Length: 274
Image 1 (cartoon, rainbow, N blue to C red):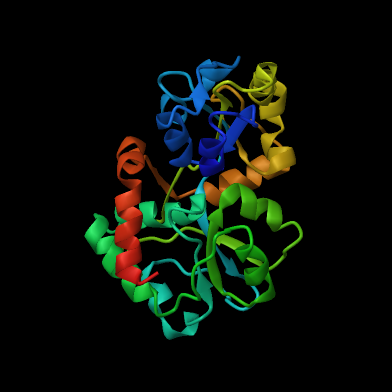
Image 2: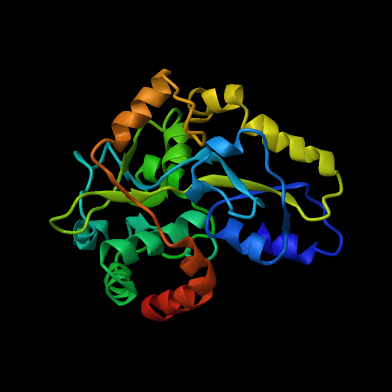
């Protein structure tokens, strides 16, 4: 979407852009977003919105993995387990630099293994079990549900919503050997496009961040409210809170990732031969 918005920069076609980090920061750095502060943005935490007011999170979300609950009696717990031979050609993750959740695999691995080199060394080993690249994360869940794959990457909001029609999906968070399961926020962030053809559509952001819509994020969308002052208590909200219990949430350095994303992806391609 960011690449398309770049191509259309001289003649914008979109009014509002919604994407995941680090692509929302990328859009901002390319001048694709104008300043627009929707009502309710003051209740969004500082790390989930741009300091200059060009974008804000509208639905909070977390990176995660999925597994087939029917074929695996319990979820894997560590990265190292995924190197086991039983996952050969039964594991797939979406492509870093192309898919937001694929980029998240790289970000989490760098965090969990304590640096880029150690993360790439692991992902090089994992390649022997990996089916291959996938431009779309969403296409992996049906394969896991059917048992074509045992494990894939995803995100909590999407996979939780999919699990209503895909009963074999289970959500889990890999840990480094001997460590706690970890994840990081991967929110849906939105901004008003520079020279938007219908600038009044920025009001959509006011609606999305409104208290009523944010109260319904979990019940309708299976996600987490982006506003700190909205506490949902519906069944989905309760289940999502339980799912996140015991999972350590870390804060990526998005400025560094946005700046170095191209080199990180190139290093990943070199390490994995992708």
